[in-house]
Image (tube, rainbow, N blue to C red; front, top):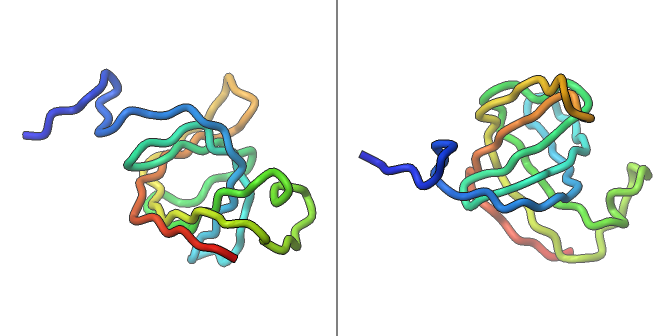
Length: 115
């Protein structure tokens, strides 16, 4: 039996950290921008203002630096970046938040790349 480490029944403690990310879903073939609010060694939490990807969807996630998060959709990447492959494991409406949806992701694996 696996013992959970915290009161929310999670495998790993969350680390609060806000970052802008871009995710691409293989089944939709489109990339969208969202905000990450925390992460752990096993996954991350995003908030969105548009309908989230489907449960079980596999996503390629790239953490963007501030200049890459600009509204210009065509950006040349000049700095090292971190990419994650993750699966949508839960999603919920956020009626009392500035965002419309919260999304929980579990990492499939992590890749670091340099441009």
